[in-house]
Image (cartoon, rainbow, N blue to C red; front, side, top):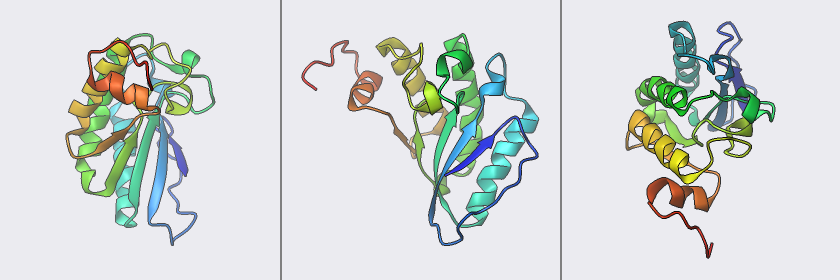
Length: 163
């Protein structure tokens, strides 16, 4: 696992193990909870993805507002901000789609793991999943934390009984 902060555009890029074929990249975006991700930070995200592509590593990506277990404190106040960040990040992700196996989560919650968030009801999950799918395109898989979140993301049913 490699963790980066999109706000710290001067962090070193490294490989801990040359033999790795698949890497998990966690990229923190919490510094941008109140506005757009600046172009300099978007360029940094692209540089990170290009580095691992050039090293011939398959990537699993997770973008998160929180990397310390404080999702409620670090998330944007508005779903519209999350959706805007998804649009911005999606453009970068699509450029590297051949090297990305899966994107984990929908940016929210503690560690980006979809728990400890104010955006966990079905309406928010459906909206965020739809925005993320549109942003990254149809070819990259999205992994959600629980099967119930998967159902909530793609159905209009409010009940998840029986699971």
